[in-house]
Length: 269
Image (cartoon, rainbow, N blue to C red; front, side, top):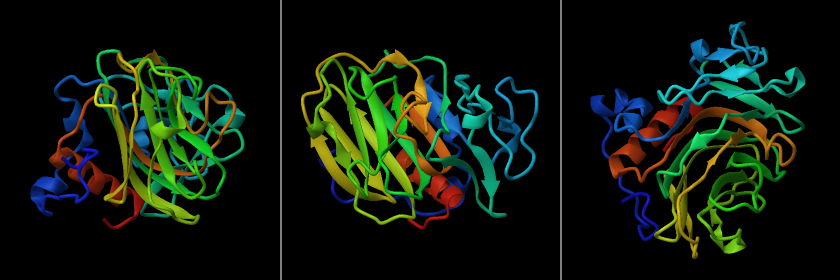
C-alpha cells in the first residue's frame, strides 16, 4: 500500500473522470472519525467564531471554519487578533497564518476508537521556523497523540504519533528537504500497533519511523491548527486544505486525496 512503511515505490491510479469526481467526503462514508477543511469553499468560513459574519473577500479574518466531513468538528478562534486570514490569488484559495499568534482549534475529537491515522494537508511554508502545524492535544510530550510539523528538523515536514508510550525522537518520520518558500501536499500515516509512522511529500515516500509506540488508541482531545495549543510553535504559511481520517487509507484513497489537494495547492504530482 502507498502508506505502508515498507513500500518505497508509490503507485498511482491513472487520471480520469473517476479521479476528477473524487471528494474527500467519501473517506467518511463508513463512519470514520476525522475532519475535512476546504478554504476554497467560502460557504464554510466566517469572520467571527460565532459564525454570524460570512467570509466574502480576501484579507478578511477567519474565526470559524466548518468541518465538511459530516462529523461536526469545526475549527475556531475566539480572539480576533489571532485569526488567520482568507486569501486568494484568483485561482488558489488558502488561510494565511502569520507565524506570530495565528491559530485555530476544535473542541475535543474522540479518536479513542482507532490506533490508525491518515493526515493529508496542502500547505506552503514561508519560513524555516519550527511549527506544530497540526497537533492532537495541548502538548507534544503527552501520550495518545499525533502531530504534523513544519521545519522539524529544518527544511522538512515531519510526523509523529504514539499510544501509551512517551515521546521519543525516533518516532519522527521525515519528508525530503526543501528550502522555503515550499508548497507541498503532505500525507502522513500513523499506526500504533504496527509501531510505524510514515510520511509522503508530493507523492514521494519519506523516511519511516519504526518505534515502540506503546499500546492503546489515539486520544479524545483538542485538534490544534497552526500552533501548539495556541501558545507556541506558530506556523508561518498557507493552508490550502486539510483532511484527517482515523483509519488506514487505501492506495486509491491516498492517490485521489493527494491529487485533490494538489489541485488546491498548485503543485504537480
